[in-house]
Image (cartoon, rainbow, N blue to C red; front, top):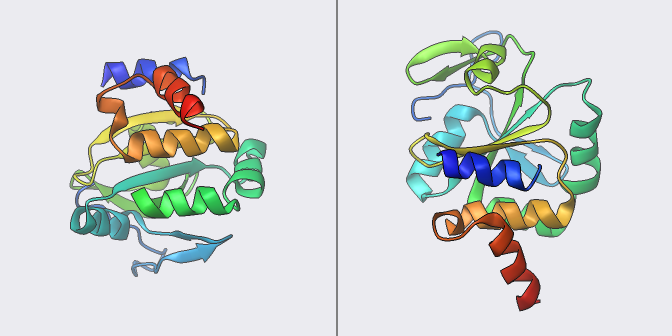
Length: 174
């Protein structure tokens, strides 16, 4: 994973999971801004069943760059199509006291964020269908770079080539 960490830094930029409401009932997927946002539990179940990845958007209500992602990047049709093709997206409020289960432990979303070492918002956490973390990427990401990153991870290209080379490759293809 260190190669993936280095890769993500270079661009500057769960099995058994459960999200519940304060009353303990499972939440349904939320359709917002053209995207369907899943609970961590549902995303992991679907990812495993359909061999897609889970993409966690770790955010905070006060975060201007989270709001900018929601306003400028997520509403774009090409972003929505790419996310839908490769991922089950999940929103995690890093300050929330709502509970999730991760690696067999119940914890708040705030504790989960710490477990994932989220130190800035937004942070994108890419997970395999098994729930293991592929890598993380903090910060606002411009639309064209975000789409490339989604495809890079979604197609498993990260296993064969670094992100900079991948970006050069897709530039020459267009």
